[in-house]
Length: 273
Image (spheres, rainbow, N blue to C red):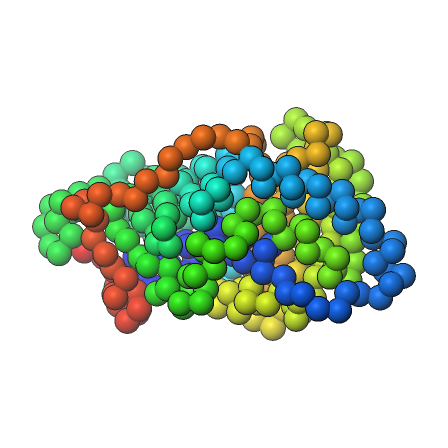
């Protein structure tokens, strides 16, 4: 697994968090635009509040960016934000070029305590002999500032809905069915200069010179988000929220079973044992 592949894999959860909760403060858009969107923003803020209380969600996600060759990387699992960002998901090994590290074609992926872990089959020999997890510190890809954002502030993936008052346009698209739930579809556009540190994170994974973040949000009849899609240039993140409040302890893998490949990633070397 090479450094470029690592960037692609870890981007999914990090991009979602940064893109939604990284909006800066500043002068709001023109009064007329703000007034016309006020009711919609209020609805989305309430949805964010309810999701925040849940603390976790079962999700189906995909992330597409230049490093993926335009093909989405799929992740299905649990996203937790009660005590910092955490996630456990399954993903096809072929999506992240790790087919030679697992026999069953599936990689278990964890984000916990500011680091990324990938479950692999025990290597029979070499520097990773017997290890069943590969570890990468977030700072190796995101830098110290980006990594710090994973354990501080709002890690709820819908927290940024409260920041849509900075959007240049918020509209109600219509009612649609999402995984069997009747939901209202909203769309909001936030200028890149209102994204704060999130703009740099998007840029680090290939978003290029994009000028705005477009968020599509679906809210069900219980006032909970059912789907969230974000586009920033050629980086696209899609999340379906299947359920909220799923209690799951996402643990740090035992150190004795873990090979730390952080330095190899920092130096751009191959990270295969």
